[in-house]
Amino acid sequence: MKAAALPILAVVVAIGAALLWQQRGEAPGTVGASAETLALGRALYGENCASCHGVELEGQPDWKSRLPSGRLPAPPHDASGHTWHHSDDALFRITKLGPAAVVGGGYESDMPGFGDVLTDAEIRAVLDYIKSTWPERERKSQAKASAAQRERDR
Image (cartoon, rainbow, N blue to C red):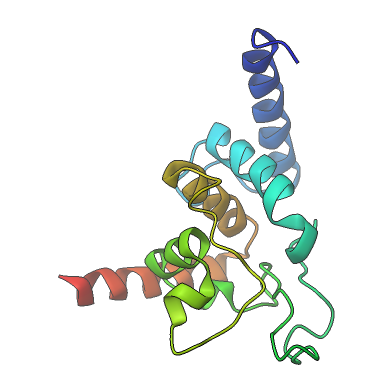
């Protein structure tokens, strides 16, 4: 693809995302992010996360049961999972560094950190996209967890 086509592609993706959110009864930026950020997050999720966490954010089957390796399958990022229980800071660090680096104590995970693959802004875009798919109750709960974490960090 030629570099000149990239801006056009970005606009097309952004418009598509805005139409998708409008059809779902949600406004772009539901989580405070622009339609462009949500479209970027969706595209990056598809490229980097969907192969394990599912195209529809559904996670792997039996995600609460350990695999023969002792590791857990990839959890869902939709409302049925536990992603929305974590603060923005925790989600960012897990995505950037990988769960094993954040949890510590010899925790093993098949999920790598994406700090060498995605910029901080791209990681935030992916997380904004994920959050934009949650029902209002889960978004509010996650926002409270984030606010509480920020308060503790002061």
